Image (tube, rainbow, N blue to C red):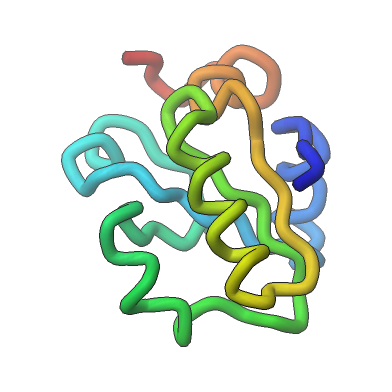
Length: 104
């Protein structure tokens, strides 16, 4: 699956042309979150794929990019047409896009 930079994902999120799926755990999302993202923990993805759009690209985000890569690969196998991984996760997003997001 292709990668998507945090900056590209932010542009897509702001333009409503892309969904950012945050697969971190609720306690992680409580520490740092990006407004407008869809938060579904990694372990719940298989049971909740019906909540994901198939008509928009999905960029998957976690803390650093490992879990998101696994979920993005799962979504591709599940037939989602356009899926990206955001390498560096929310940590990189905080550095490159929005420094007001806490790093942890």
